[in-house]
Image 1 (cartoon, rainbow, N blue to C red):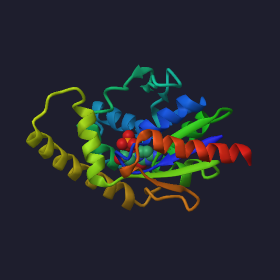
Image 2: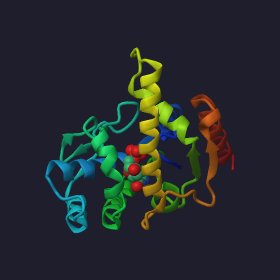
Image 3: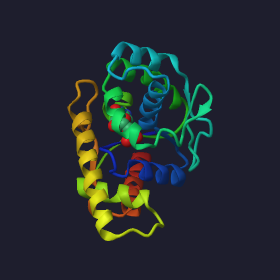
Length: 228
Ligand code: DC
């Protein structure tokens, strides 16, 4: 079975996919991490991000793998080197949409994405999973949340356990909101595989729901499919 979870940055896809994977024994596939890995490789090798041909070539050449496979400890490697932490920086956040918009890069990611799902139950998260990568996925979820709420979650996650003045927090939320809106706009309006809900996706707005409530809704969808 394949569960596709698509949606904008900060809508909770990763957390929800991880919970669903743990609870139902699925393997989680984070496709955003793959575009981040291509972006990191380009920056590290000083490949000009505006040089589409060079970025396409790089995406075709590097070997992206997921060493630990499943569960909570999902790792990602490029040519054998673990990049799991290195792909989660503001510099990658700011540049990944440009790289992910290149059709050649997207084409290069399709084969490993589909190979990953061969012969196993997968919960895959991204922007085009239900529309392009796995159009025949048994369950498709389009997860959204109010942009301000998404920015708030990102900032709280970033400073988990830290003391933070309310004013500084508000300023960072505003800054993060602007960055999120910029990325949403790029991801939604690009020509190649833009962020859109598949016609047969179940839309879930997580603004007013807890993680457990969203997972419970997906559990219902799984039960429906398995019973069908
Ligand atoms: O989910 P994320 O923030 O890690 O995704 C990083 C970027 O990759 C995001 O700006 C859009 C892009 N992306 C994509 O184009 N297609 C996917 N299936 C997943 C991510």
